[in-house]
Image 1 (tube, rainbow, N blue to C red):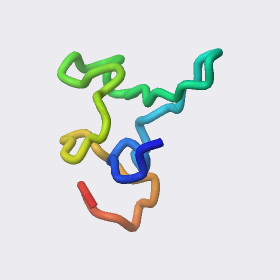
Image 2 (image 1 turned 135 degrees about the vertical axis):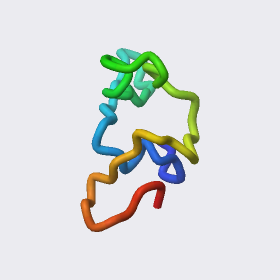
Image 3 (image 1 turned 30 degrees about the vertical axis):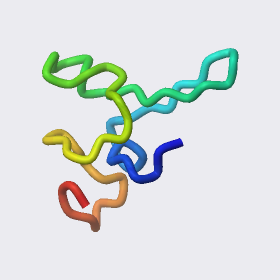
Length: 61
């Protein structure tokens, strides 16, 4: 897991686990916008589409 990655707290991410136990972060924005990678390389430190799950936080915090 990558707690230092923005993906960890982004409302657009989905956690995907395979049969071998590996975890991947699927970016929900990639479905509508090809500028976003489906499975971004981790850790992601800057992302224009980031929206915190905790709405009290600001962008890219």
